Image 1: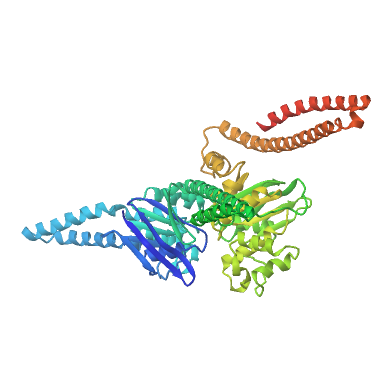
Image 2 (image 1 turned 90 degrees about the horizontal axis):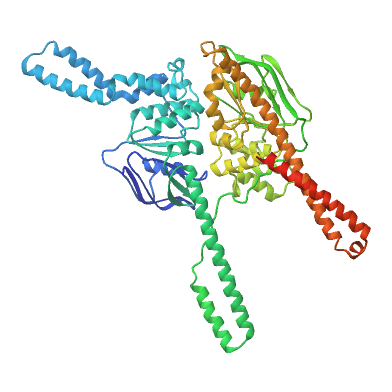
Length: 637
């Protein structure tokens, strides 16, 4: 065991963070701390590192063990470059190296016992230097910086010129290189692109120490952790396994608890009904029996009804009208900035009902593409065309059309006066605004909170083509799941940029990967993209240095591309035919039942001609249904 908490408590006034919470982290264990926004995850981390005092209980770090902490926001003050700042993590090794070089110079001038003594020191330091991988510390620094998304051209950038997200990445790199015995990481993936997140996953899986992570990235948690610590409504609960195992276990426990609660409620109602019946007899014996049952009822310890956050919240997104089948056509689109080409000669089409995720490294131009499509920025070359009756709903975290003097509630109700108060509150609750939060002024909100209000407004817009830039940023896991369900039920068209791989897996039917200034198309979700990435990237975005085994390899893969498009068209046709078949089956079954009802009427069964007509119709229905059932089975496989 490396870290333990026993009976810790913390409150801010009436806001209870944790009550009598206990858990422990073993050596080398990878654990996650999860819970809804505002539950107290960051507060708990700050208590563990001593930045905040607890109200009670004790926190124990094993003697001699070191602890490293990455906060969500970094106020890094440094006059050095990125490389110089991260290099500070290796200060001990660098000092050791300088000492070794100094001793090497001394040895030339020493003799006898002095030489022996100095050589002994030199050998001891050399052994320690080798143990700490001192000969490779510079390559280790470069590897970590590149893994976190910094190119070699970035190493010389002054820290003072970096954005908040870049400073967080520098701090993460510095922390990883110090190699404490236990890492406490608060939302480490927030400012990383997909490749950097994948690199961090591998790094943490192989990390020799223990790790405790706060994260809303479910895919990341599934890959890295083997224990989940949940903080919710003041309670701390430990679950073995990754995030998916925790979610399933929690669902099972809640169902068991709900069943126990419902059974007890049924038992209580039964006792109450018997008591009421006995008292209605109004006899001495029956009244005594009623009183005896009342005493039994008083002894029953009530089972609390299990509470699950946002269980009653459902977002219903429905376009106001249906667009044409061709939603967007992009032809030879290109965009560059001084000294940087983002993309060039990009062409693709989007059809009605498609849910497409755009992925790619930071700085490749994903957000820029969305801005071009929404005419926030002009393209340098090429054109794009929107289809018939296409109405865009655009969510851009940098441009929120909000009124700073309004409350959150008024911002929604003024734009959508037909909505009930309950519908507005449910929508806002899905985006983490509950209770009196809905009466906060827009001007008093943080950037992330304003983004959530904008997203809530967009979900009510009834547009038939949603274009979203990082829609899951600033959402907790419960809200992400609500949004996923709403988007999966959405019958319009969806195009979004996201780094949330779990979200992409749940909502995307197609992926556009922006790599080497072009888009590579994948007809499937994120798991399909991982399976096909190397193959298709080599062919469509390999660059000048790409070497192919043969011309046949290229042509076969291009054929595969065409086959994917054809397969997608076939799938749409299959779905349409399946739907029509199901509708026809329903219609015929209803008519068959209607005929059965008619033939029971006296005016029908006494009319032989009418009976024969209905019998013939019924036979025809049976024949057609038999064919339709067979067709339905074929289409469903």
